[in-house]
Image (tube, rainbow, N blue to C red; front, side, top):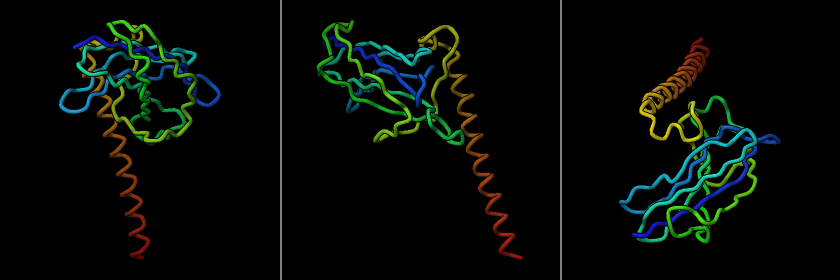
Length: 175
C-alpha cells in the first residue's frame, strides 16, 4: 500500500452569478469489492470558489473524482439535487498524504446540462461551524432522516396531484 493524494480547486457559477454554498466532494472511486473513499468535502464560498485536497493508501493508482451537488437551473418540483461528476487527471496524483499539486478545474457554469448527469436524493445541508463541520456530526443521521421524509412527502404530493388529475379526467369521460 502506498499513500497517494490529489487536490482540486475552481469556481462554480449559476448563470451570471456565483454558485454559493454548493456541496462539493473529492472521491477516490474503486472498482470491485473495495468501497469508494471520500477524500474531502465542503461547500463553495460566497464567490463560488472551492478547494479540496485529500489522500488515501491504495495498492494501485487512485482514481480521483470531483462531484458537485447543486440546484442551479433546476425545477423546484424535482426532489434532491443535480449531481455532476468529473474524473480528475492522474498526472495530478502525488505521493504522500498531502497533495503537492493542485488541479485547477477552472470556472464551471452549472446551468450547463452535463453528459451522464444524475440526481442525488439525499444531499446533506451545510451546518453551522464551517465547511467540514458535519464530517463527524452525530446529528447528521437525524438531518438525513428529516431530508428523507421531505423527499417522500414531495413524492406523495406529486402522486396525489397526478391521481386527482386522473380522477377529474374520468369524471369528464363518465358524463
